[in-house]
Length: 308
Ligand SMILES: NC(=O)c1ccc[n+]([C@@H]2O[C@H](COP(=O)([O-])OP(=O)(O)OC[C@H]3O[C@@H](n4cnc5c(N)ncnc54)[C@H](O)[C@@H]3O)[C@@H](O)[C@H]2O)c1
Image (cartoon, rainbow, N blue to C red; front, side):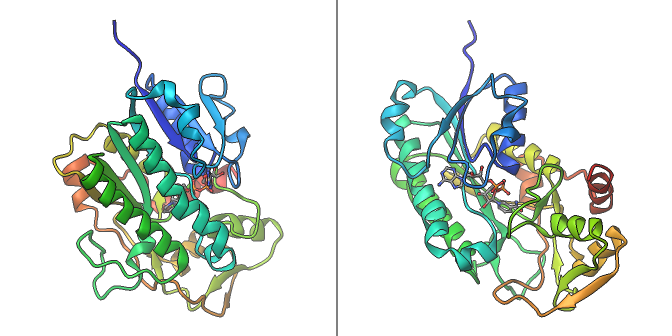
């Protein structure tokens, strides 16, 4: 008889995590979601709520080990997405973000070690690169974090490296480049540019652009990101820790992005501690995961504006 694979998704109530959970359920996995709902929402999981085991807890809480001990040696994959994202938040809420992003990865790796998981997938960020002389950014460049969020994500990568080597947990780290798409959080002080602009359009206000707008980002559609997670789950890795960029492979300026929104714009003073140019080199993702991004920024924005 075929047994069902059990997987853990931390941060499963968030934007990216909830879409991943839906796909894992469709593919027949038993999914345990750990989330403290600090930024995530139960309603993000409404399609799958009756099919998942939901644990409303902070990932840094070591009592999770005794709560989940019945799953010892039976969890195949552990996806760690729980974090307090956004650069601005990490500057204004240093303690909270350190707790979720640094103590959080430690708690997640300790839980994975305790349970004897077969693979750990860590969600890192392109922010770890900071400013570089080279662009596109490839995984061999020396990280150069410019803000607490980037440093926290990089500490997470270092912990993953150590746990893979010292405790023998195979890890795949995905460095995600600016993820967008349906389901992004549209509320609160730290919403992403897309949601801020949609709000400004609805209020007939101009779209705000920091700096001259010539800075670039590599915007990656949520469906491409989820496909990368699923490929990382199946990937038969040779090295104990692989770090892989997940982006669209194309950079666009913020001014070009605003053109796609077809609104009037105003420019604000530049934000400090953010990088100027960002494009993912996705050769490694193509080679190791057969990852191919399918959604262009033009298609992704058009979809988003249709359902806003
Ligand atoms: N969205 C992006 O553009 C992007 C880019 C690079 C990396 N990432 C990373 O991807 C992951 C998911 O990001 P997202 O955009 O879905 O964010 P999100 O805020 O929507 O989701 C994060 C989830 O983690 C939960 N969480 C936070 N702290 C927790 C804790 N201590 N214990 C348990 N749960 C906790 C939140 O409640 C939320 O459900 C994060 O690790 C983020 O750093 C995101």
